[in-house]
Length: 300
Image 1: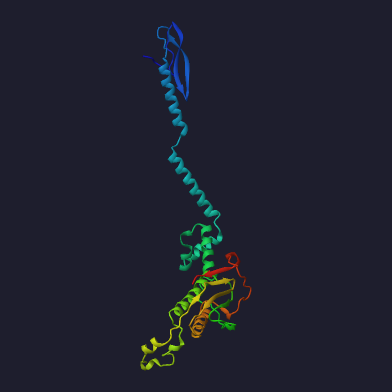
Image 2: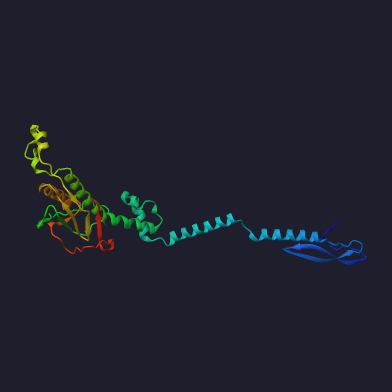
């Protein structure tokens, strides 16, 4: 059996001695110490023992060199990033974002707009900009029409092949486009179903107080009137237009449209004028369909 002696061991006292080698390890080095040993107890380590000691030294060194596990280092990095974000939020958080967060406490509509973006100024800004783009700059404004009546004019209007133009007080928002387009779409749907037929207005001049009688046989014998076709609605800045083919519908369709636009203009979307006919109005440019140039459309 081979015995290795530590450097902390005192050399044995012996009158007759000779130098021999003992082995110990410190850090990752194998150290050979020369000690005084009796001549009859010389220690000679084998190559196997040296390799075993070296392996234990290397394993111990690797464990001490890493210090922490991969999971602990990852958690440490996460905590550091969280601490940095908290510091930035306290010291570098924009003043406008703090004001907006405080306003959300008393404004349910604004709180719905901001949503879960509180604490992220960039996301808050994007949410507000999107809201302004869709509805306009006034969050609380519910009535945005004009108190002035719009002008109506006709320019070589052909009911079977003409544009109907309308000039607004300003460029429409996405909400305005949807509102106006929905009204025109409903007008077209009623026309396709034969609603604009002045030949069958049995109740228009009757009083509803005396339970009037509606003659269904007369209604079925009247020549039907049908709206033929309509284009998508286009906008360039504050001008808009759509093409129509009224088909067999009569001028009653135009009365219905103007009645609808009158309320739409006064309550929701200010209209300056409506023009029936004409090929080009205002600064309209054919073929300009880029949204960057103020072009918008509504598919009917």
